[in-house]
Amino acid sequence: MTNEKEVVLFQGVDKVYNTGTVALNQLNLSIKEGEFISFLGPSGCGKSTALRMVAGLGEATRGMVEVFGKNPKDVIESSNDVAFVFQDANLLPWRTVLDNVMLPLELRGSDKKARKETAIKALEMVGLKDHLKSYPRQLSGGMKMRVSIARALAAKPKLLLMDEPFAALDEMTRQTLQMDLLEIWEREKMTVLFVTHNVYEAVYLSSRIAVMSARPGRLSNLIDVDVPYPRERTTAKFTEFVDLASHSLEHSMGRKELV
Amino acid sequence: MTVKTVSTNGEELVNVSGKTKMARSKQKLNLKYFGPILALAIFLSLWQFIPALLDIKPFILPKPTDVVAAAVEDWHLLWPATQITIFESVIGFVLSAIVGIGISVLLASSRVLEISLYPYAVILQTIPIVAIAPIIVIWFGSGFNSIVIISFLIGFFPIVSNTLMGLNSVDKNMSDLFKLYNANKWQTMFKLRIPAAMPFILSGLKISCTLAIIGSITGEYIAGIGGGKGGLGYAITVAAVQLKTPYLFACAITGALFGIVFYLLVSMVSRLILKSWHESAMKVER
Image 1: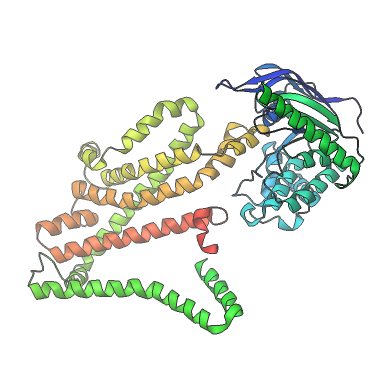
Image 2: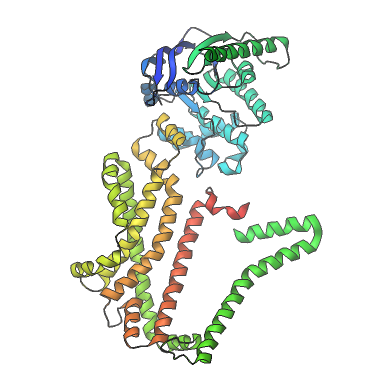
């Protein structure tokens, strides 16, 4: 599944906020096409900051971020290749489900009829075809997140960025959505960057885990999760990777304590 | 919407425990309407009998029956005056809505403009319009024009400050979403900022619609002209000078009734607009 085409490149990236907080320190990472990579780390490790830079929503203080070999800002200006799923579903409450999903296409000014077809297809993919006319407030948290994913998919992105999308959901809903997300990833052959602080989630979903440490945020370990999909949460191999990821997470936090 | 909710509640209650609960909820509903009506009846009868008991003259405190009699007797004056005041208030209000929202949108679309002018929008709001009303009369002459301008000015600033606040209260994530999809300034304005500001704008309109009436009646005090073109404010000043107190009461109460109706209409429109999504318009449903 991985050919060697580079989708995202972090090169010596520092991010220092105006307040003096160092959010990222010397981040170097290359993400290849078709990967499902998770940024795993405690809060304050700069994982969301890194994700926002890929989306062109933030700039590096030093170093360089490239998406498809270009500046992220240019990429979002010229195409819908990058989509972002926010932690809260971030739907417009005054728009119906269908209108919310059509938004990205509408903003790019595509044909009205095609727009609707694409949106309905995207909603079908997340299993919400029967709720086109509902308003966000009528939906449960899990359904809202599905709409949000459908909105991201509607623009047919090549790179999907997800910022702790399932963190606010209950365990049952989360597991179903994780399964569905993997299915979509395999079918659509996208590259996914997924931010999470949940070790099990990272191991279940990712082909690679980038473990980050906090204050200053930096990459502390890269783990290739060498387990075939679909993964079983109970196998020894799965547990082994969970232990490995937990360990490097603890290690990175422990190191902070020593400093 | 209220009616629908009540009936579903009623049905659920029947399913749970038969007729007693439904009867009780009906009783509660009756009290909701009956209570205020009873309070009004008591108030009116006290008002009716106390002046008679204490022998207060009608030109000091007229009884409700005196007021009604005056309204009926002078209906040929009261009704045209009311129509004029309604006309002026509605025009003043509509102008303040259009100009207020329009200017706010322009201000909010340019960071420079907004930063430079917003403080003045706040300060101007505190000017008691009544105090500058005579200047408006000097500039625009007595009569309709001045009155509408006063009514417009008094309703204008609440709309501007509310709209600006609303346009700037857009959720950060939502504006990031628009940035990500490369929305231009006007797309963001019309598809995100204005809809998000709607609750603020509409509450500004609710404030302004009652203010517009105050504005036009005050305007009529100062700039009202006779010959059946004076409106309620002018009629009130005339009635006060002639000590026609019952008629003065009739004018004031008519003005109040118009105010209530106008406010309810604007609230209804606001509720319709926000019905599908905003908290403030859907309390009854939960």
